[in-house]
Image 1 (cartoon, rainbow, N blue to C red):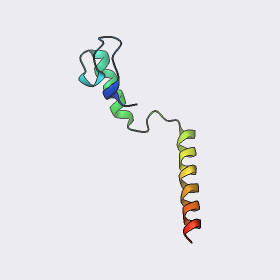
Image 2: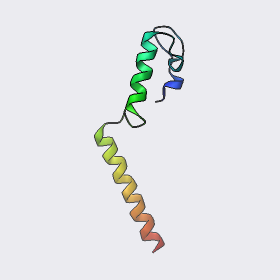
Image 3: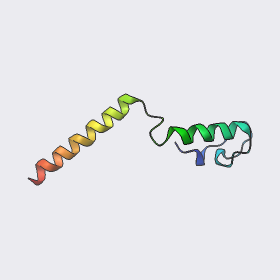
Image 4: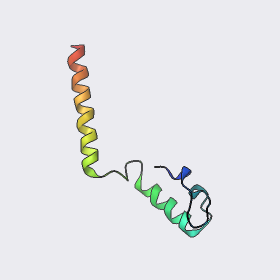
Amino acid sequence: MTYDRLVCANCAGPVSEGRCRVCRANRERLQQEGPFGGLNPMTLIALLAVLIAAMVLLAHQTA
């Protein structure tokens, strides 16, 4: 989830604006994690396996 849609429970403002210290801390944490920060390693491995299987299937169909 991106922080531009999150609403702070402390100040009821958008987290992306960073109105309070809670907003600023969560915004910083989300920026450090990156786009795949919330996913666990098993999910990433499963996504990679699905991607490889799709590529193999596509290569097999075009050959």
